[in-house]
Amino acid sequence: MSESTDHPAESVLHVGGASPYDVVVGHHLAHHLPDMVGDAARIAVVCPEALEHLVEDAVGPLLDRDVTVLALPDGEESKTAEVAVACWEALGEEGFTRSDVVVTLGGGATTDVGGFVAASWLRGVRVVHIPTTLLAMVDAAVGGKTGINTSAGKNLVGAFHEPSGVLCDLALLESLPRDELVAGLGEVVKCGFIADPEILRLVEETDPESLDASSPVLRELVERAIQVKIDVVVADLREAGGSELTGAHPGREALNYGHTLAHAIERAEDYEIRHGEAVAIGCVYVAELAHRATGLSAEIVERHREAFSRVGLPTSYEGASFEDLLATMRVDKKSRGNQLRFVVLSDIGAPTVLAGPSEEDLRAAYEAVTA
Image (cartoon, rainbow, N blue to C red; front, side, top):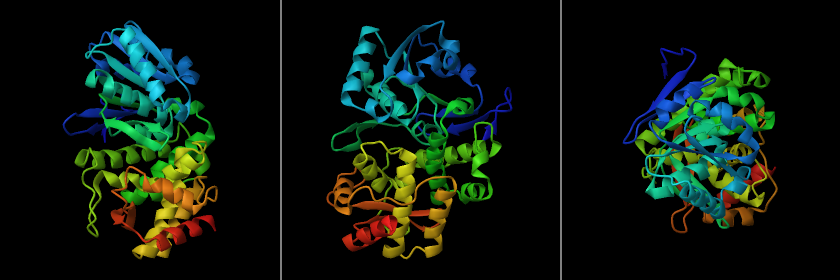
């Protein structure tokens, strides 16, 4: 992490690789937009209807250009083929060209569908993300994954499309409901378990009520979680590095820690449960699974429960049957053939892949989560 010389209160995290870009973390960052969009004449701002009132302030330096707002339904309801088609039609009507830019303003769902629209329009136009939730800042906005849902599951249609820049404006979290902020901590704590134990220490030693938009600890947690994602993504952008070899690092697949069950829970709950809440449950589940299948210590399993519950996240679930969740997990995009794959830990910061666990262990781990 490096400090901006012009604005020392900002941090710039660089994402290397074939399509490098910067992630800026700080407060009131709109002045960075002109550099990120370059000389684009047309800007399409993709945002939920509920956030249209933020557009003028969020993209103020771009308002002297041809700006079109593409308003979306809220949350996961926006991640449909119908919404994507409506966006494509609007871009066509505006004469949107390859030199123009999409700017997303919203949470993870907006980043996902807006990024997918940018990835697919004219086989790819530039996109800049302005995430408005903690979850989107540390997860969806960084790494180039885009997607929409189908009736079969979450994010089954999508593309890898890296942004031209990301502005993590912590001032946007000031109006975020507390429950949404807490949900975003699910992905932050996950990053602590898979790669950065300092995140766990900060969570365990900080009063969770003090974590708000102005908190220096929250800012450090955001930066550390983003850095975890950057380090993994740069090494394995397209999630090609997963291995069944015991002890081998699973590459980008490590970021899916807890997500296989989490996505099944989200579908069972009609996406009414927050993603970070489902991830917290999913992480406890795979810790229990690793305890049974590979010998992960009971102390680390308990640390999962304590860390997630400390920030206010759920660690148990009984809203669906094991059989129903298992059926959904089998069509998860992380499965290969008929074989289920889970990212598990051999220790804190040491993720690996568990391929084809026994149904007995899968069921026993779920029973531990429902207990």
